[in-house]
Structures are given as structure tokens and as C-alpha cells.
Image 1 (cartoon, rainbow, N blue to C red):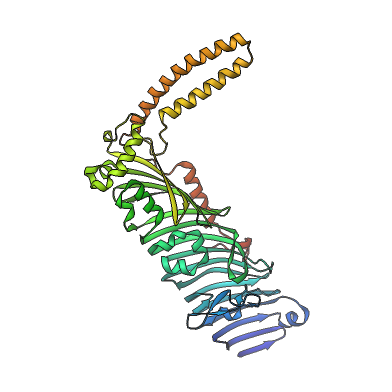
Image 2 (cartoon, rainbow, N blue to C red):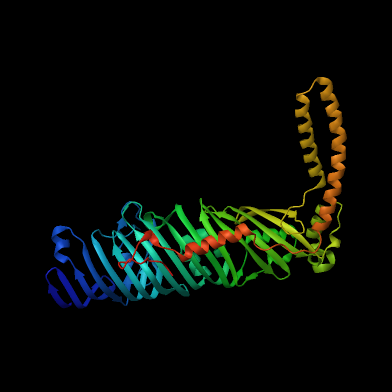
Length: 465
């Protein structure tokens, strides 16, 4: 160390040391030293920190109760089975600002390089201010905080901005990514994302997913999806090879929100070859899914003469559905279809329904509509009959029969007319107003992100970028 000591203050012009396999170089000022050591007051300072290699894993405490529950990365990047890691606790009575320049950093199973940025240590918390690094094939900017006031349940609030990241590497490295985007295991390629993630950190450096909340977007840049069971199930339903092939997903931006243990993907538009789709839904931590795909499919793809006899089964099924309304699919160039995907991401179930001309409303069977109308009219007349004498009630029931017969005919005529309109060549509408407002709300949260409501020492807000 090169520097000088003044009363209650250390000025380090140059300080270097090795701790285990990590090298550390620093310069700056440490204040209130003796008051911190002898009177339990706050240690202050401003430090510039540099390192060629910093292994954070060696600073984590170990839990003796579970000796082989989690592998720990070694300096060569491999893993070895050791005692389970516990969260790093931030010491009390420290208020220090650090500006970091680290060439390589190892944290759990992640390796980051060329790390630059600032962090503040105060009030048993660490706040990151636009820390940037290269990892997993791309670049990462990180802002937010890690608070250990509750030692048993440390809290975190982080904003990630990831650019040109590799799907497979990210899926294997981030536990949170596996929960937020389980589709990542079927994707190859690169993506961008910006998201806010907060919650509690449990044992073994794992987030407590029951406390986790998140919101942001996932943007695919150059991606291919393979062996994705839900889309394969849609293809099986139509007997259409389009959905069974390798699908290219380029330049899509999908907004999502995690709440109540489920990730809600806001409705977005997607076009694959000749098929226009609108996709929205939820998936849970258990990987149970509940998605709706609204597709505008060219009729030629479904006919026997369109893409071959293999498509005839799907076309025949839709034709039977249309025939319930006394309609012919050949009257339209396009067919609007809704697919309801439920079950599990690896074992999905598919239900298929015809949609109206707007691409939104489900076409209702005339028989079902008549049945509902009859039920409604009967219940209404019976209620009136209860207030009258027996003779009046009997007349009311006769009246019901007459009215129901007239209403049934009227409903059939009305629905038949609407169903004809449903098969005309009209595209589905864009995102509705409600969905747009939800996306705008997420954008606003990303812009005003301020972990733990922390303020800089000059009084300005500490927002993330």
C-alpha cells in the first residue's frame, strides 16, 4: 500500500492485494476509520476498484446442513460439489461509493468480463448504478439493489438490459430466465430484453419464486424455435406441417408481467409465412400454460388442392364446424380460427373454434343460441306465472311456447346472417385499447425504476438505464 494516514482518515494512492485466487487493486479515501473500529460509527469513503480476476464465490458463506445440494464453480469455470452457498450479507455501518473496473468476474456459474460501473454500499444494501459487462455472448447493463437488512430473507430489485444474448446460454445460466421464459429451452439464436425483477433471495442464492415479480419485454433478433410442443399440437389439430417445422422468429417484441405466480404475456402480432396470428396468455412456474392463438389462415392451405392431401383433415374439421351454421368455407379466402392451449408446455392440449369476421369473437352455434333464448324466456314467464293464479299461469305457459317458437326462428335467421359475415375476408384487429394500456404501464415502470427508493447524495433519484 502507498498512501498516508491522517487522524481518522486513510488516503490510499495505491493499494493491491491477493485474496485467494483474486487480485484487487484500489485507490481512494476511507473516512471515519477509528470511529468505526472503536465507537461503532459509520465507515465512509470513495474508492476506485480494479481487478484482472475477481472470484465472488470465495466470499460466500457455506451452509453445513446441505453438503452436496449445489455445485460451486471453480477458477477454471467447471463446477465441483461443495457445501451450499448462502447469500452475501452486507456489513452494517458502512457508507462507501465504489467505482469498479474488473476484467473478469466469477459469480456462481456465471462469468462476466469487462465490468464497469458504480456501486454504493450503505444501510446494509448495495445499489448498482448502470453497471455494464459482457456475458453469455452479449452485453448486459444492470441497475438496482440488493438489501440484506432482513438477514434470513434478503431482498433484491434489479433492472436488466440485455443485448444480443444467446438463448441457450442464458436459459442454462439464469434461474429466473427459466421461470419467466420456459420457451427459451426450445429457442436457438439471440435476443434483447429489458425487465425489472424484484423479490426475496432464499438459500443457495436462489430467488424465492413465491415472492418474485417482474415486468418488461423480450425481443427476438435472430431466433429459431424447434420441437415446441404447443405449436406442434396446433399443427396436429389442423394436420398442417407449417407448425411442425422449424420456425424462424425474427424481430418480435413481446411484453410480459409476472404476478400471482404466473407470467402473463401481453397480446402481440406474429406472422409466419402466410398465416397472421395474435398470441397472448399465461404460464405458471409449474410450466402449466393457458394461451390463446388467433390465426387468420388462407383457405388454400387447408383445402385438399392447396398444400396436398395431408391438410385435408384440418380442412374437413373446420368445414364440419362451419356446416353447423349452414355455411361453406369456400365462400372466403381466409378462415379465422382460435386455438386454446392448455395443459403443460411439454404436454399441451388444444381446442379449436371458428372466429367471426373481426378475428376476435367466437361464432356461436344457432342451436346453442336458441337453447339459451328458450331457457331465458321460459324462466321469465315462469316467474310471472308465480304471481298469478293457476289459470293465468297456464295461459302464460302457452304463451311461452308461442313466443319461444317465434324467437327461435328469429335467432336462427339472425345468427345465420352473422355467420355469413364471419367468413368474409377481414383481418383481425390490432392490439385492443386495454392491452395497449397495460404495455404503456410496463414501459413507464421501466423508465422510472428506482430500487428501494434510494437517492443519490446530491439528492437526485437513482434511476436505472
